[in-house]
Length: 319
Ligand code: 13P
Ligand code: SF4
Picture 1: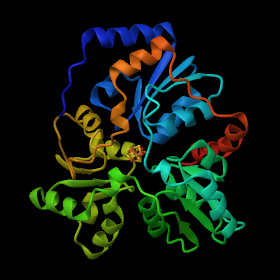
Picture 2: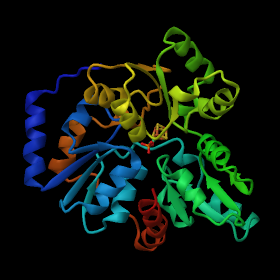
Picture 3: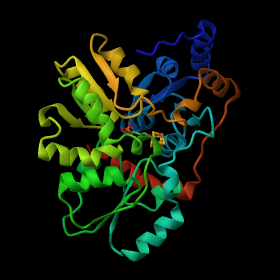
C-alpha cells in the first residue's frame, strides 16, 4: 500500500477552510492517496457527477481532471466549482474537438451520438447521450436497434461495448487514453502467470480490454475470475470477493482505495507505470489554495451548458 503522511497542519487547514466555505471535496479514484484522504467522497466519474448534481454545499472542490469539473458546473450551475489546477486536462478528452464531431455527424445524419464523459463541454453539447464506463453498455442498449450510433472518443471502450452488445451499426472514434492504452495484454498475462489464483480486474479503456474478451473466449484468461469494470465496479468487486489476490489493470491510484477498503487483501498493478500525470497534478497545497483564493472557478457558457446538460442528465439517469 502507498502510505503518504499528510502534513497535519495542511490537513487541518483544509478542513477549516472547507467548513468556512461550506465546501465539499470530491476526488476521483486516480487522485494522489493524500488527496483521496481529505476528500468527502472518492469515486468514479458517474458517482462524482451524481454527487455534484445533488450536493447542497456552496462550493465543490473537484479533484480530478478538467472535464469532470466542467460536468459538475453544468449539473449544478448555482454552485461555485473550484478546480485546483487548470493544467489537469485529459489526453482522451483532447482526442476529439466539437468541430471534428460536427464533421463526423455530417457523414451519418440521423445517427445517435454517445459521448464518453471524458469529453469537453462543447463535445457533450453536440451529443445526444453521455455515458461513463459504469453505464456505457446500458446506454447503448437503450438505443433502438435500428438507429446508427456514433460512439466517441475511446476506441477500447467502444470496441468492448460493441462486443458485449453485439451492435453492428455502431461507429467508433479512434481516440485513446495514453495511460490505459499502455496497459497491454502481455503485461496482464505475465502478472497472471506469477499469481495464477488472482482475480483479474480490467478497466474497459485499457489496451488489453478488447483482447481480454478474445482471451476469455479461447480460455487464455479464466472467465470466472476476470471482470471488466469501471473503477467503482472494481472496488466493489474487490470488496465483495472472497479471493485474496487481485491484478488490477487501470491507473494505479485506485490501489489506495482498494487497500483501504480491504486491508487484508493483496492488490497488484498489471502495469505499475500506468500513472495519469493529469490526475497527479492536484496536490494538497493546491486544494488549500483553491479554497483560500477561490480559484480556479470553472464555468461553462450558458448556451453550451444547456445543450450538454441534456446528454449528461440522460447519463445520470441510466445505470
Ligand atoms: P471511471 O472512474 O468512470 O471508471 O473513469 C476512468 C477514467 O479514466 C477517468 O478519467
Ligand atoms: Fe484522461 Fe486517461 Fe488520465 Fe483518465 S487516466 S484522466 S482518461 S488521461
